[in-house]
Image 1 (cartoon, one colour):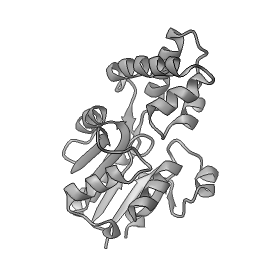
Image 2 (cartoon, helix red, strand yellow):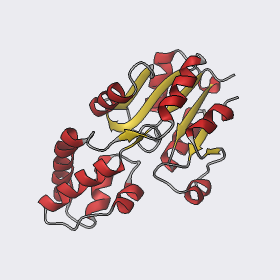
Image 3 (cartoon, helix red, strand yellow):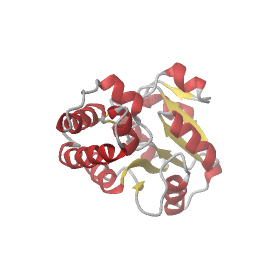
Length: 213
């Protein structure tokens, strides 16, 4: 019996792509570097913002990448909610799960402060715990954030499901010893996800309600 569902955030519950693209391009412009399309940024997401800016910048000195990351973070902190919204059907799905007595958590490679702000704005009263990147907790695909969330919820991995949208999420679930459901509306395409080990996929939030029985 499933008692708990742990969700990824970006690309799973909320569509952050445009705000992330705008923030990355702001930083790139400040350093005279070519801007990136939303499609480019989409491919680079999933491994934290340092990796995102390194991929966006290409072959530049490490010092430049560090400055890009600082400029990105400063801009995104202010503009992280300009166009970000939950995907269609997400709120209804979470309410249904909550009504069934399912414990709900969020884990993310975003900084913890941004995670708490976004969860408070969009999912107040629906999410029982949320864990972002912070000191002492390694980012996914390490299972640290997931295990921290399970501990707060008082849940076991074997009675829980992890829901994400990327190869990082698939690997995270594996390392945490959890079943994984992969959503197809996020930052990766179906063929890519299947090639990276996705075994159970859903095309809409409503399908998760059926998938867990």
